Amino acid sequence: MITIKGLSASVQGARLLNDVSLELEAGKILGIIGPSGNGKTTLLMCLCGLMPFENGSITVGGKTLQAAESNTRSETIWEFRKKSGIVFQHLHLFPHLTVLGNIIEAPVHVNRVPKADAERQAVALLAKLGIEQHRDKYPEELSGGEQQRVAILRALAMNPEVLLLDEPTSALDPIRSGDVRKLLKEFAASGHTVVIVSHSVRFLKGIADQLAFMGKSEMVEMNSTVELLENPRDERTREFLRYSELN
Image (cartoon, rainbow, N blue to C red):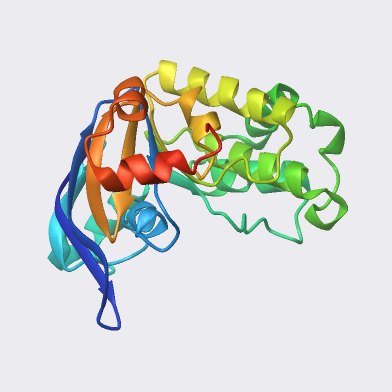
C-alpha cells in the first residue's frame, strides 16, 4: 500500500512536485500520465527514497518517511528503500555482469538468498519474458528491448512490496509489451503494488486499475482507469487525452 500526503520537492529552487497526495491499495496498479517535465519521474524517485523532499510524508508497505528524514543516511531511510524496487528509464544494468548475474546480484548479496535458489528463480523469470536464451550474455550484447526486459526482471527478483517503473515498454514491440503486461498483472495479483509512469496510454489502459494525470508538478486528478479515460474532470486531462495515441 502507498500513502502520500502533501508531498513537495524542489531542485535548485525549481518546484518539481507541489502538494501531491494519493493513496493506492496493495494489489493494485496505478498508471501515471501527463506531459514531460511535470514531475512523474520525480514522484517515483521520492517513492523509492532516492530523492529528498521538502514537505509531506510517504508511507510504503507500512514504513513512513517524513520530509525531515528524506535527506539523511539514517536507518529509517534504508529500511524505507527496501520496500520498493524501481526500473529506471535508462535501465542502469551492470555492464560487467551477465544477464543472469544482473538478476541474481541483489537477491544474493542483499536478501541473502542462496545463489542456486536465486538462479532458479531468475531462469523462471527469464522464461516468462522469452529471453532465457540470453542468460549468459552481457548487456552490450542485447538489443534495447532485451535490456529493458532484463531491467524489469532484476527489479522483480527482489520481490519488493512496491514496484515502480518509468516507461517500461518504450523499447518493446506489441508482443513483448503484452508479455510485460501479463507479468506485472501476476505480480500485482499476488498482493504487490505497482506504479507505472508511461506515455503509452494504450498500454496503461490494458493494465492499470487506476490512472493519475500530472500537470505542472501537481496531481491534477486520479480515478479508475475507465472513468478517467471516458470522463476526465479537468480540461488539462481532456486536452492531453485528445492528443494521446488512443485517439
